Image (cartoon, rainbow, N blue to C red):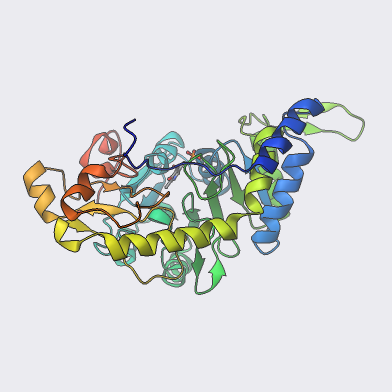
Length: 351
Ligand SMILES: Cc1ncc(COP(=O)(O)O)c(C=O)c1O
């Protein structure tokens, strides 16, 4: 990679965390164990005491949430086309049909008025996505879901640390899925978690993440059903513990860097920037968007992919406008599903 290239993301791993991981490696207990338990306890505390189960990845959290919500063949699930493709893939893999509704052009989040219009008798759930860390309006979302008796599976993969009206995402609502992939505000290299409502849901999640195996009091094991294999390792959880201690600091720093982009990217260079004044976002990605001018010139599909402005920050003094686009990592952070392979097979976009 060229030296003056701004990368999409870089994890911040401190020496204490690295030493902690070495300790785990030396301990002889490297798969799910005491560090996973400690990590889950911290996550639960962060989520206002709700049950939280750590998982191998955010995709797994979405898969288990769909299972717990009872989504299966014949069901429809309403979601956004502007997301990472995992959101739609898990719906298809559950045998259900993703119903893609368009996004609000300003926030690039699912348009909840269109979402309500897309509800049919087959709709079982809505999966809103807090794209780039910007939270979907939870008041309106849960008002619609409540009125139509739908489950909500929050794809909060990108929004740990974001808030809605002052309340941390994950501390309220229905099923909430976080990702701890290397590019997230909090990372465990690969990892994720599911925030649940009841001890019964938590038990189902525990069994689902480990082959459906029940450990009996006498030490025997029994297979209650064919589960998946989605547990987190203690190595990953130890990284997460080091990161949890710093999440507020990380997000504060992101706020400072996001401010720098707004101050220093010349709007005349043709990039569309996200809403600037939202204090509730964790600034996971201060996303830029190829504006109309770029779309025409480069014949990009509509809407053009949201692309990332990287976390580490612009060089002091900013970038001259004409170089800004060239210098930013062209990593595509979200794929517009309806513009590509995502529509096939079985997806439906309401007209
Ligand atoms: C919006 C969204 N949903 C789901 C996922 C899947 O998370 P993971 O990569 O941890 O499986 C991601 C990860 O990038 C994401 O950004």
